Length: 228
View 1 (cartoon, helix red, strand yellow):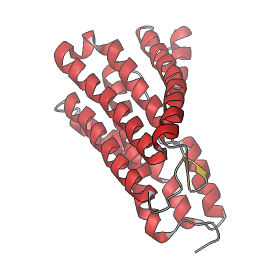
View 2 (view 1 turned 30 degrees about the vertical axis):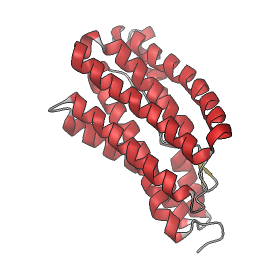
View 3 (view 1 turned 120 degrees about the vertical axis):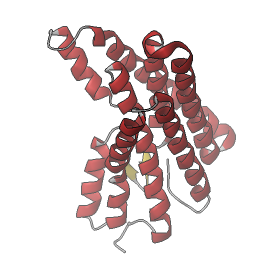
């Protein structure tokens, strides 16, 4: 094993956590884009859409939704960080992570219920708001794994970290970081398939992936896994 690489017994579970959380983002982003023309995890995409809308290159109707997503995510990240900090002081990192991911799951469930009751059109802005907040909380759940900066709501940082770890001979660490694009792709694909029948099924798939990641993260933290 290369110096600083991840222990073999922890590599699999850590990879699974990254893939599952990224899959959650892929699922909700695919749903939000397909139904509302907006991203709720990939805020860079929203900035592009907003710019195109302002210059007349994109439908102006998407401008409000994209701006709402961007603002909700930005405020949500600050709120999530404050909540995470308070929870860590009171109950420790593993339990704080569980609570934070539970909040994310609740927000996704509320979105599904709202769409079920009021429909895609009438609940559109509320859905964008709730899903953007859910991704803000996910972004605050995991920021570093085994010394690498990892984000599960976007793929760019993880791709850089994967390449850097690979260049240093940290093969297992590189694979873990590469779990973000893999998970996001799989999540988006699953959502695309489920959307053919029901948006609610797709949303609950996101709850399932977030829940599975929570369970794994909580269990391996006690085994010395370095997750922040």
